[in-house]
Image 1 (tube, rainbow, N blue to C red):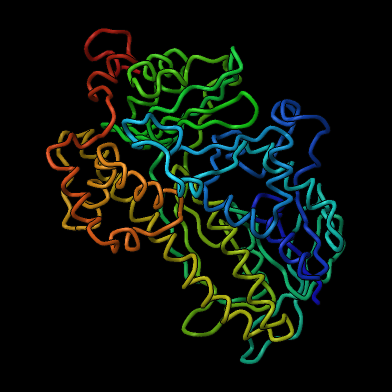
Image 2 (image 1 turned 90 degrees about the vertical axis):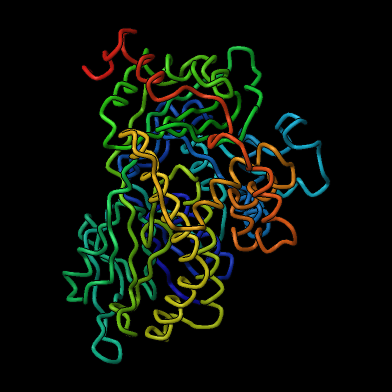
Length: 480
C-alpha cells in the first residue's frame, strides 16, 4: 500500500482520495482554501468561501452517471447528500406525459442526486473524514514538488510536495486534482520536466447565473430538459438542495449586447420570454447575477512520443482536461477518471513509476479522453451556431455528427424513445454511437425531426430578446 498525496479537496480530489483509501492506501488531501464552516446547507452557501474554485457559486448539476458510479463505489456519499437535503431527481420521469409517453420501468437509470456546490463538497468531506487512512489538511498551499531519483531514461520523478509552511510531505504518488486552475505545470517546469502536450483555447462562453429559494416549498415543475437551446443563447435550470434551484443563461463571450444580463432587471425580463423556463424565476432570489467568463477548454497529455514527462505524479479530472461546464460532465468524467486510476493501482504500483505513468496515459486515452473530445466538439459547433445567429449568417458544417445531434435534440420532444436516447447521451450513460447503433433509432430520429423547428422549445427571436433587455425602444440594447 502506498503513501499518496492528493492535491485539491474539490469533488474529484475527494472522490479519488476516498476510492484510494478504500483500497488501503494512506491518503493525505492537501487543500489551500480554509476549512468549511459549521452548520447546514444555508450556512455553507452563505459563509463558505472557496477562492480557489471560481465556479463555486455557479449552478452545478450532477449527471445520472455520477450518481450511478457513486452508488456503486461510495454509497455513503449518496446517503450523506440525501441526509442534508440534496435533491433526488429524474428529469425524464418529471416531464409531462405528452413528452415522455408515461413512466417506464427502465427510467430509474435517469435518477440523479444533486445540490449546490458547497453542499456537495461538504457532504463528500463528511464521508471522507470518517474514513480510516484518509487525512484532509486545509489551509495549506502547495508551492512546489520535491524530486526523487530519476526514472529510467532520465525522466524526473516526484517524491512529494513542498508547502507554504516550509515543510515537505513525502509521497509514493502525487495526484493533481486542483482543477482547471492547476498550477502544477509550472512546478514541473521548475523540476526540469519536459512540457506535456497541451491543447488550449478559450471556450467562448459566459454564464449569468442566479439561485432561488421557493416561496411555497414547492419546486417549479419540469416542462423540458434541464439544458435548453434557443436562438443565440442556451439556458440551464435545475433543482439543487432543499427548496433551492438555479438558472443560468449561457451566451457567447463575443455577444456584447447580452452582457446586459449582468443586471437583474434585464435578466428577469429575458427569462420571462421563455415559457418552459419562466416559472423558474418565480422564487425568492438567493443571489444577484453571478457571472463567470474566461473559461478555457484545455487538454494535457503527460506522455510525449511514448515517454512520460514525469513519474510519481498523475493528473485527474479538470487538472487533466476541462471544457465548457454547461453540459455538467466535469464531475462525472473526473469520477470515472479516478476509478480508472484506482483500478490501475491494483495492477501497477507506484514503485513501477514509469510503467504506471504510461499505463495511466493509456487508461485516460481509452476511458475519458473520448468523452472530453465529444464535449469539445459540441462546444465548438454550438459556439459557431450562436455566432451565425448573431451575425445573421446561418452556420453550416459538413460534419454529419452535428446534424444528427441537432436532429436528436429536436426529435426528443416528439418521440418518447428518442427522448430516452437523447437523455442517455446527456446523462453520460451512453455515447451517440451506442444510441444510434440501436436498431431503427437513426430512422426514428430523422422521422421525428422532419419539419420541426430547429429549436424544440418556444422562445423569442434574437431581436425580441435584445428588445426585452433594453429599455423597450428599438436599438436600445446596442447602447449598453
